[in-house]
Amino acid sequence: MPDDLLSQFEQASLDITRLGHRPDNDTLLRIYALYKQGSEGDVHGARPGFFDFVGTAKYEAWSKLRGTGRDQAMRDYIKLVRDLGG
Image (tube, rainbow, N blue to C red; front, side):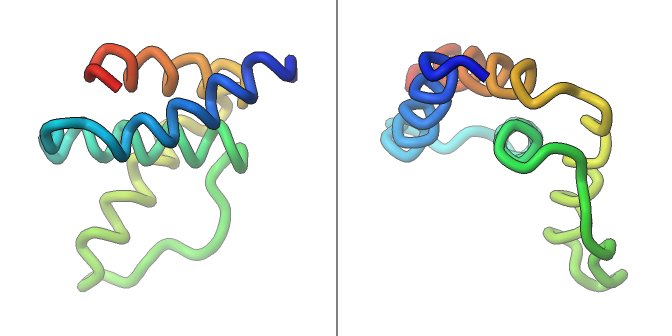
């Protein structure tokens, strides 16, 4: 992966913490999933238990990106953060 893409991805991960507003839950799940796909690749590990609603939602959001390349996930993450004003 190009160093420039990695540095933009890292900068976006800092910028997202400085937003002046809290995105809606669907957007937060998209942010989480793109970050995980960009940093770790396809979903791994056991699916959270039935009563772990937040963990399950995060796991499912990330699993929907299965097969998406890490570089593409990074680009999508950077674009989303920029669109949010980060």
